[in-house]
Amino acid sequence: MRIARELHLQKLIGAQHNGLIKVITGMRRCGKSYLLNELFRDYLLHHGIDDGHILRLAFDMRSNHSLRDPDALCDFVRERTSAPGMHYLLLDEIQLVEDFEGVLNDFLHSPNLDVYVTGSNSRFLSSDIITEFRGRGYEIHLQPLSFAEFLSAQSQDRQQAWNSYLLYGGMPFLFNLQSDEQKADYLKRLFAEVYKRDITDRYRIRMPDELDRIVSILASSVGSLTSPVKLSKTFESMARRSISPSTITRYCGYLEDAFLVSRVKRFDLRGKRYIGTLYKYYFQDIGLRNAHLNFRQYEESHLMENVIYNELLLRGYNVDVGIVEGRQTFPDGHSQRQTYEIDFVANLGSRRYYIQSALQMPTADKREQENRPLRKTGDAFRKIIVTGDHTPLWHNEDGHTIINVLDFLLRPDSLDL
Image (cartoon, rainbow, N blue to C red; front, side, top):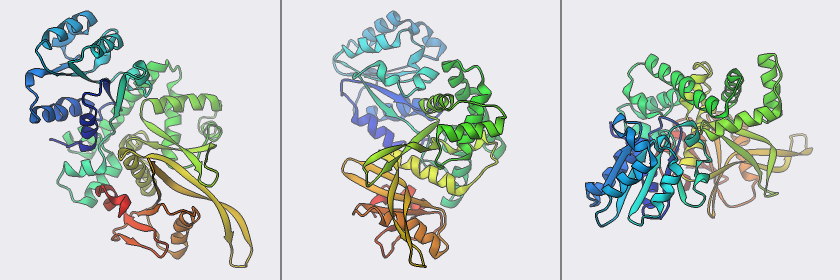
């Protein structure tokens, strides 16, 4: 089955011939090799690049075992790229090559080589791999399938696909599995045998059950404000033993480095500063989140919020939680100062959007709860409420856009409607 990863493919295309090592990062099994060796290669062929000028090497193949030696690899590449013209190196599982950093830096000195690499071990999965090249690498981060990509690859209608996506997420291999039991088992094993093992091995964690509990706490509180102190207290109540906030911070950092979770800071819109005491966590794949909880906690409102966050990242936005202060007047006439929260503040260059996620707004009080923080910003940036119902797009009396989540996810221009 062919799934067009168009946004990520365009990033690869835009990075051609920029003189840097193109490093495709992302969580395991999210489709890095497919993006590079199938979609990008097909693009090169379609645009007139001779197949003899595209050198693909997968270092996890037994036939390429000898090329894990750095000198053998350099000699092999020089021999195969001696013809005039630009040559494209597509190197998969590059971490299996001894001293791969030195090899890639050597390739950078060859003006006829355009180099693209992927990797999958715990070190290469880390978000800090790009520092290995310090100005000589260009990172292209691949996420699991977005909902639009997920829908494009199957025959279900929008609502059926949405229900499946909220439960099992967007790992591409799921399309090879038929039953719910197979899908659930795959995600559970993937988390336990791959992600957990990567983190445990890389950081030499001696008590992996602590990591398990922390993941469970984060998974149970997606989209909720938290802090190391709060997480530590929750851990102690669950495990009946203590863990320090500094250890919590370290473990959460490991999860971020492996691209399993993303931490979102709070930003004071009036004070124009970050507030560092509380933040939120979202999972890069909600199916893995659900699997870790054994599919016991299915709260559509939190899962929808998580999907919206991932979609904003996919579209290239920097995302914060917005905080704005104002006065609220009560029916008896008295007022008091309140702090209001906006789910997402999405920034890209000079563009800014305020976005609320609301599964339902059945009452006037609920509608006011969602609209009030947007009014309090006091600026003219576009304000959007994404709902979980089937209501067609409309604009309320405040000028705020109300759009259902499926239209929001499936329309690339949904932020500007």
